[in-house]
Length: 384
Ligand code: ADP
Ligand code: MG
Image (tube, rainbow, N blue to C red):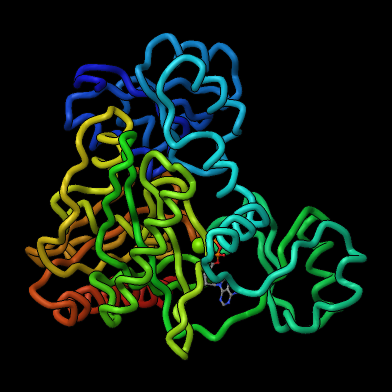
């Protein structure tokens, strides 16, 4: 066990890293952040921030020398950095798990191999591979195998010609072409698996996306017990079969006929698990620190239903949003990530509304959302 007081290293400096840092600090740990950005959300709350590239040898050496353990907050961290650190300190998640989640081809192949259903897909490495036999995947989505997030690096395609164009547009890099499914809803499950193979899962979250970016998470998801049990079992299976150590999110599609398909996995805490900070006994970030340090897992139960809404940079179009819309509700919790620049589509913060029922939480959350957005629209009209 790594006792409180020790230093933990964190690769990456975004909001997930900021919330991890705060949770680890409240358990008494010190956090050393490696992030090339100067004013990142995590660096600004860290005990120390090294501004350098993730593969910078001096930076990695100082983490290795100082930290008892290290983790990452985004899946695109270079595997080499994790491999280097794992020779000197505890690293979780492991480089092999991260490698699977970094690559959609490897990810879908792995998921199918453990008996989970994924959307029908084909790996595309060369343009010629689109010449025959892809009709069954259309209309579809061409997704870059690596480095996609928040709907970036993917293009919807209806014909073989469009698929060819999309492949070129995406840089002639390895891609997957997957069939566009008719979704009833989207779910996610966050699980933690400890070094001694204990697994705990949080309640299922129901997620709505806008323009490929998570917009709202509703917990518990409004699905039957059978669906909730099956996605929780699937998420647990992913963690076990990966030999995973840490916090992991598995995203699911629920189809019109009730079938459940795995969309993708994220080897880290996830945006759809932010509700755990305010609504659960143990947050996903505290659990990540617990796993990293070999502490016992905390309970994952829900205190009450919760709805989380993301705050994107678009809301800042006419200046700072009027936070009183959120703050005047005593059971709404505001989280801002301290990002200096608000750009459209950029995740700037979120709020979580707690209530006795999902319906009540959703009603307040939507009322707040409407007031925040209508302010922006009204101000836009005034300045137009
Ligand atoms: P990202 O890594 O950007 O989160 P995803 O593969 O999860 O990429 O896709 C983002 C969103 O796009 C999903 O949450 C879903 O709303 C939609 N989407 C992705 N793949 C499909 C599909 N095969 N059929 C229907 N919708 C999809
Ligand atoms: Mg996704």
